[in-house]
Length: 435
Image (spheres, rainbow, N blue to C red):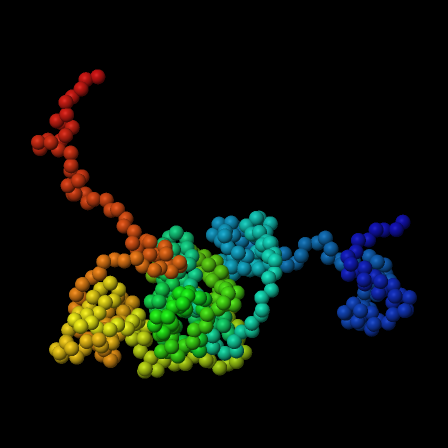
């Protein structure tokens, strides 16, 4: 009676080759090439086929447990950690923590399968592929640095939402600078750029979006030199600013933002970081770990960064600078404040003179005439007028101008109002009623 043998497609292909060998219509060397095996393996396989028939080609391990199967102890511990401590982690990040922090010997694929089976992770639906023109990485480290700001609830409610400024190298994918700030403002980018310049030097170019910090977005603007304050500062440092036309054009920093919103948030949660100051203190450690995992080697070994020179006075360059003309009374107005110049020379000597108003990140004002500081006094403060605010900074502007009512102090007279009458508690002076 014939016996039913279950075979895979691969084993059926082997059976066909063995039958041709038996019929001597195929040589052993040709059979080895067809099966991508050695001649010695084909000889052993043909011997098993002659002794047992088709059953000799079936794997003897079928139906048995794998020798590399995950032990029940490791599986149980991994499942417990994935369901509690690392519940909302993705398979890759969860696997890294199980191996590096918890010391489990488990593969990434095993973690993914456990999370899929238990419902802790769902396979993402494959999105429709949108074809964009590919752009190869720049060959040199420091040749092009992509910069962007990522607003997010970085501390998951443990601290106020803020913006993370991200500087990433195009050639290597290395994070070069991270900084938590209130918003994407001129002084925020100056603080991040200053720390970056001191650590790495000056890059050839920054690649950004069309935010108002980098580009004048007012149509038909003819005032000034049509350069933003940050653009003026970068011109003095000989750093070019290039604005991308679409988010996909600066895809590396956009992708980095998505990775950071996952990995960085969870890393700070595990470390109990609940303030922006603690977060900024942790960022250098995170940058080092991120670059170790994801950075790639550049095509060229040349470092395009240039060192800062003695003429690159960052404290002077990275300030808000505007040009003004002195009035007949030697006064100048800046941000609704009138400043009076103090000088010993005749007043007519400086009438209509051009000066530069400089404001640093702390709000300190300096008036420069021919690059020399002028003494001044605050003469008058103008009434508050309507401000033009960028869309990204709208929430910050509203929160700064919003007055939050404060409760009165415990000893405020309002709290004592109506509580006493003629020196006696009010409840003792009220007429008593009977039920």
